[in-house]
Length: 400
Image (tube, rainbow, N blue to C red; front, side, top):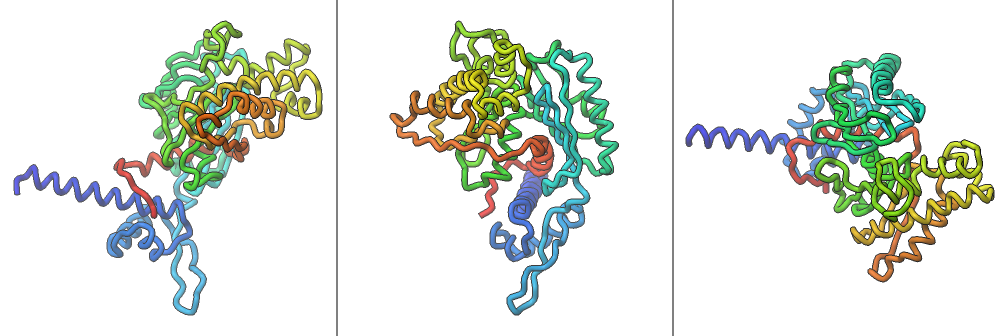
């Protein structure tokens, strides 16, 4: 056998071992606490392979013992789970003006969290240094040894280049263009940093914690300062070339409509984004309540709040109808604003969905409100870190 063929064989063996290791880890992540026998059954791997891989994962302090199974007369089996004390990640939900931070372990247990709301008029030159200082202080005050942090995951609004870790544009922040956020944070934090669309990460957490694999095809829409979405097909997220797929907030509903912060006219965000709703309410009332308060007023029957929310909900329903028809996916989850449930906004959205119906295409809509609470928004960045740690090699692996 030639040297080249021998090297190729060694590489193939190494690749297969890494793939099997990831499969075992995925099985534990999904089904823990779990016994070795159950891992054998779910992965289909041989006993020697599983035993050796479990030893490696235990030696690396990724997997740990988690008690014993209930005995049915014989010897109780040892149970395995992820080690919640040795591996942590920093998650940042950069929605703007709100920024939320959390540190969680591999099980998704949040050990520390903090949030800040920046003033609307702040520019990049003031915001970025302040954010870096706050992150440093947050880690220092978290009680978590920084050496145990495996990385940071950032969900950020606006247009991104997730491949190169660049925040290309956030219209709501003056001067925020082509910010090399990944390199800035890595230089400051001395750890790997990953950048993703903020709503994509909300959808990731919603799926993992509240939907599971049984809902394999769905559209997640986040109504935040802006509006974004992520589509899952066969349990796989459609991220797009640079990570901006599902940018529904800047789809054009009326080329002659109100000016959007992106410079175009008639974008969905100009009608239905949280900031747009707050601005419209303030223009007509002279008051400046936050988004949650406007929703409360609308639910309480205040005519102006109801009118503003209903108008926004109508346009949101029209845009959502187009999105559903485009992908022919009937399961839709609305997240990012839990208070919107049973509000005039959602009533108007549902009405618009009926008027611009999908029934003619045989699509029977199943619309639900997301269950993800605000305290878990930054958890998406933590999951991103751990998923990336165990994403190589990129093979199609399925726990049966």
